[in-house]
Image (cartoon, rainbow, N blue to C red; front, top):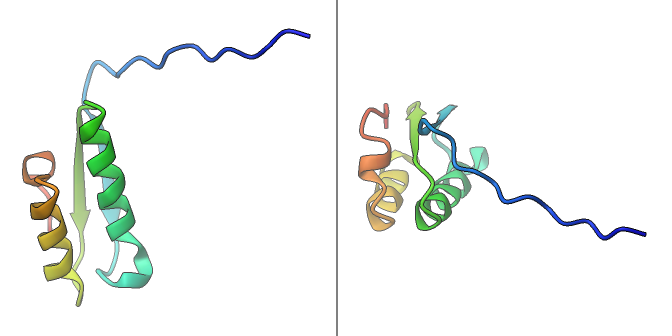
Length: 79
């Protein structure tokens, strides 16, 4: 039996585009998506994350984006 050996993943030539369109509430899990973006940034993956929406969690999400220093990764975001 041959052991599985995954090939290294190549970074895309252009930045990954991620967009969330939702009401900004805890239930939507956008804080989890922002955490995933932090991990992408740490791994050196080029991406842009846009959040389009309004809601009671807007301030919390902005604070999280600032805390993780992700402002430049989503400068065109609706948030």
